[in-house]
Amino acid sequence: MAAAFLASMVLLAYYPASEFSWWLYMTILPVMREPVFILLAVPGVGLWSAAVILVLAALLGILLAIRPDRYPRTRFIHAHVALIATALGMVRAAIAQAGVSGLSLPQVLRGDWSFLPPAYSPLGSALFVVVLAACACCHFAIIRRIRVR
Image (cartoon, rainbow, N blue to C red; front, top):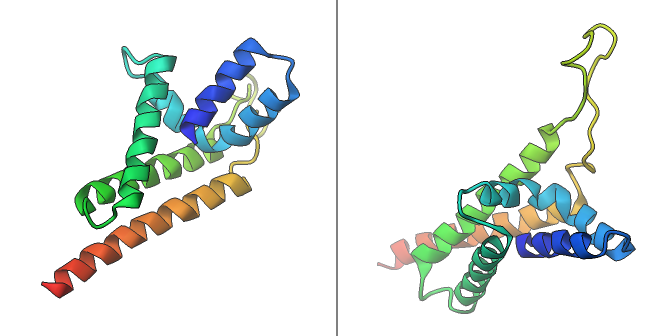
């Protein structure tokens, strides 16, 4: 999902008038904004290296999904990093506000207004539920392995 967000950024750079580019960017923005921008804020990580990191993380997730019993600890860590990143993205999108209320009279301008689409998008909610289910499956697998021994 984060790699698709980076691809949408590249599409916007090359085709700023494309309706599809804007649709893709605005659909994924509330969900992946913070995790991707945190990754891009790391010194030395550019757009292409971030894309490589995210594609490798996705490929690792596919490998772990294909062979779930072979790498239980790695799957556990992978699922929980994804859960933290997804939750961080949803929470930060919910509180990210833009406004001028801090620069002007607080009595005149009460409250902030947001440039972001609603934080509780169906895509973000579905992604969070899927990642939460992956974490629950990891916990159940670990508990099952402990009981078998």
